[in-house]
Amino acid sequence: MLSPSDTKLLAFAQTLEITTRDIYAAVVSRKSLSDEENELLEQFHAHHVAYEQALNGLLSKNAANKRDDAIYASFDAKLSEAQNIWIALLEIENTMISSHTKAIETIESAKVAALIASIITVEARHAAILASQTTTNISTALDNNTSALVAL
Amino acid sequence: MSNFTRRELLRLSGVSLASGLVLAACGKQVGLVDDNAITVLGQSSVTTPLAEAEVTDAVLLRTAASLEYNAIETYATALDLGVFTGDLRKVSEIAKRFSADHSEHADAVNSLAVKFGAKEFRCSNTRISESYILPALKLITADDNPNQAIDIVALAHAVENLAAQTYQGVVAMLTDPMLRADAIRIGQQEARHAAILAQILNPGRKNIGPTSDAKTGKPNIAAVPTEFGSLANIQLVIGKPKPDGTRTTLLLETPSLNSLVYDFVACEA
Image (cartoon, rainbow over all chains, first blue to last red; front, side, top):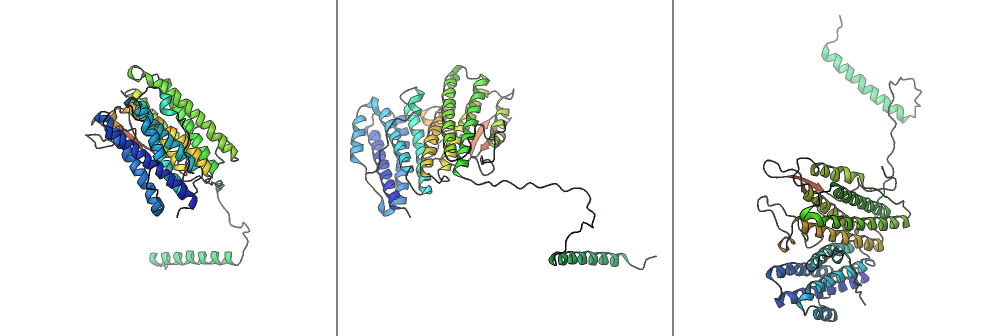
């Protein structure tokens, strides 16, 4: 049984994952990338679907089931030009990592925190790979300067 | 000449032994004091009781610090080997950056341990070294191993996965939510290290996700092998190929109860 505080934090995390899922889906549907690039993004999209569904299962009737339109619109604008796609997706993954880590600071249940941690380590791998598609600068793959998005 | 048969003699000795045990038990019950009348031959060794081993947040932090030193030592060995030449020249720079990251992580984790009233731990985890890293290095540095350079990268990749898994795993064990966040803040960077090294070992977009070896069916190294961070054991395939083409597989596991750095554990160096 989730506490009211954990329910609020997880519902926001689910909203962020749904938003990220939809952003990946939008990029793939534009067909502006090669087949191999699209395959890679489809894999990452599938991971975000799995995260959203795992959180949905935990939240049950309290599930969010909707994306954050404002966040979606801000990233959608960045993705409009093909050369920005990798950097914009990198920023999304890094934002997910910052936001989920911030949530762990206050999540009461250790089991729920562990689930979020298992998402963060894979999103970090996504970020490193997305960075490597656009630059050989190792710092871009390793450093995360994004701010956390927090539940209001 | 005795009148006892062998069978009777054996029965009598059994009865005597049983009687002795009954008397001894009764003696204990009535509170008889040992007067040292019975001679004891030799000396029994003195047993030292085991120290109290409680898995606290500080112990988990000290264990994480020890793994950082395992990683630092692995990169130092890798650079000392001088095998990163040709296509692998860029690995030297990567190894230096990753090693510097691990030094920062060790400082951060140790300062948290001190904050929680524990002593900092500034050396590698002996059990991890002895169980995994030293046997791996023995195979890698063998004169007849033709894959030294790529094998040392494989070891670094395994150590990075081990570190990432350890930080992810301790999130469920730490009692303080702030510490859980601190742990995964470091763990996510270890995961990035692992992903970058995986692309050196098995490059190309098609090898970012999970694939398997066509001949053996075993999973290939992948930058993003699973959709959720795995806590399963880590396969490390290294060393000279055997006649059938296979190589030695070592299985690495995150620190368990027998490899945690408890309060009473001190650096051996």
